[in-house]
Amino acid sequence: MTLTGLPLLALAVVLTLAAAAATVLGWSRGGPVRIPLRMLTLVTTQALVVLTAGLVYNRSEQFYPSWQALAGQTGTTAVAHGRDGRLDAAFTDGRPRPWQPSGSDAWQLSTPPAVTVPDGYTGRDLSFPVLLAVGGPASPVSSPAITVSIAPGPRTLDLPGLPASLGADLRTTSHGWVLVVAAARVPLAGRLITEFPGRFAAVAVVGSGPAPAGLGIPVRVVAGWADAVAWASARTTPALAPPQVLPAVIRP
Amino acid sequence: MRIDGLPLLLTGLALVFAAGLAIAVLWDRAGPVLRSALVVASVLGVAATAALQLNRMTATVGSAPDLVTATAAGPGGRLVEITIAGPASGMTMPAWVYLPPGYATGHERYPVVEAFHGFPGSPKGWLRKLNAVGYLNQEIAAGRMAPTVVAFVYQTPDPLVDTECTNLVGGPQAETYLTVDVPAAIETRFRVRADRAAWGLIGYSAGGFCAADLLLRHADRYAAAASLSGYATAGIRVGDGSERTTNDVAWRLRHLSRPAASLYLGYAADDGHPRRDSLLMARLATAPMSVTTGVVAHGGHSDAVWRTMEPPAFDWLSSRLARPAPSSRLDCPARSSGPACPISGS
Image 1 (tube, each protein chain N blue to C red):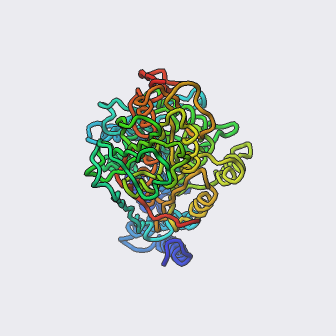
Image 2 (tube, one colour; image 1 turned 45 degrees about the horizontal axis):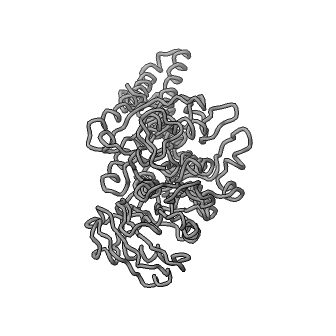
Image 3 (cartoon, chains in turn cyan, purple; image 1 turned 45 degrees about the vertical axis):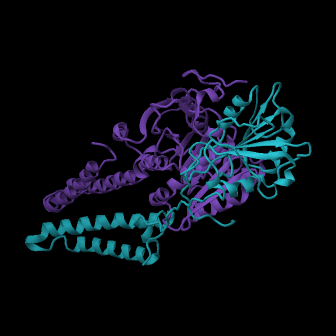
């Protein structure tokens, strides 16, 4: 018998009516146990009235659609799945390392990107956001994000596939990344923001003058690389352990 | 004796039994007046006791000072009670604010989440029924969530008035309270970030509608929202017809430009209306919005479902909000009159 079905509701109504009838019919009977009998039938009737009202309300609002729900069982456990980056073992916290994934030839860079994983990368399963530094000094400035230093060549127009390649090689987040670019590289920043929508949270431009318009995310012009990296790093999402996840709808 | 405490409920039950006993014993000797009085007392006793239990189940009216005391000494985060006087909205309400572990000794400014309750309900739904402090402590300790300040706020000044977090024409200005007064009070009193990237919303049931609606209506202030068993529509009359247009989440997603914001939609598969509405919102909230869904197998529209969703939803929110960061690296909030707020080099 289901919690919200008609049979249970009908049973509750019948029992309520029966208890009410027993109260009335038994009121003057029972001899020496008359008083306890009156009490019993009266309170039972009251309890059944409340129970029936509760069943009607729950049937209309469906707060508890099943006995399981009433018992507080959801049949669901959230799970947290970590994952490794293919190159996790090759990196040491804070030490830059050249990174040449397949397909990086298309980026037309003058030197391979230098990638630095921050303190706390090794030994735990945290995923980190990424700070993409374009056209800056070769030795990166410290950031709580994974830092990828890019030295664009004269023919570098965009960086196809970079987020996916980096995500396979290291434990990166899918969003909350930031850009730190030399003023001359603002057009490249604009293309990256457009090409990877939702990925970048802010861009710091190293230079002077007014902030470039139309990038669609917070922009700040900062005089030096160290300050620009610090400003942008504060706009990344946190490095977190694998989240607890519920099953998702595939596609509604 | 607390109105939402077990002693009062047991007292109510005892009165029901006492009234029953009085009827059983006195009936034969009583005249019509006393008999009527006894019956009325008995019926009122049953109704009042049922109402007490309903209030306990929804945590609508009552207090939570013991929660504030309980967290003061513990190893996790701390809960503090404040009063938020709303100069913009005219609403003045208590609120409970979770300060994460490390808040007292740290120097960083934290991301903030505003948490909305269901209707009928109150912030105590989060604190008592849904064990929010316990789950926040657990997720932060596990590193699945960054230390975050969470404000548990009232959505209505009157437990019987359902605002759905809107500005009711001729009634409470809940939307202004929640999106202007609450952020101002939190930013003034606590070491939090003021930028949009660090502010999020979460709510269950009616509070789920609030979270989705206010995210879309105030995308310049909030970056992410989690709706747990929420609705796409307000289900009330706002007074200006906006419940069919600008206070209807599906209408907004269809007719207005969508913001670059993140939305989490959780529901139980056997909870018909929120399920339909969540699927509708998930279908409509296309780029530049980002949608994540979380489905609980069964459990209806109940505390058990929301407790199952809490850790995943909090983890998701934290992953979508900007990290705790040193004050020196944040831009000074325009309204901050309190703690020093140096501006980074520009």
